[in-house]
Image (cartoon, rainbow, N blue to C red; front, side, top):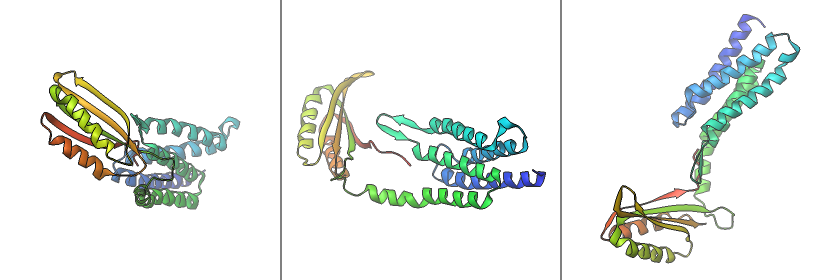
Length: 235
């Protein structure tokens, strides 16, 4: 491999990785501009190294297989589990694709690597709105369940009343089911209690949760009332 050929392949890998990284950085993901660029560039360097070294143990196909394994470790580092929520799967998949595009560039397959980069960027840009629209559809008839978490911070004297009121409000829904209800004192302030309820449903109803929280916040002794969605994956 000539020095010019080496430089061209490296620049192509760098540029395509940079393009993927720009989209990730724009969405402010954990693995952004630098990470995707480095993954694509590193994959190209390893492939070109195996091409330049005339050794039976440095087969390009064998090195490429090791690149896939190495990027798998990087992908595992950006996948986070927060309770029942898993984040970073899309970022890890993008890193995996960036490595493949870098490997293609290292092989000198510029057309294929360019098409691959366009496909990855298009998937991240164009499929996100589609996924959002699909997620807004009712979940009935599917095996999927949407989870909500509701939390109230209140005085110890009002804990029983608010707990009973929360159960009454939840039972008024025909679609929500109570998964768990936990009431405990706050360690730093024993005079305050935390009431946490987890609800599951097959119908998205943010307005109902907002109605519950608004109703509970009107009660005396309530310091804060909030709700959030759980069991949803971030892009």
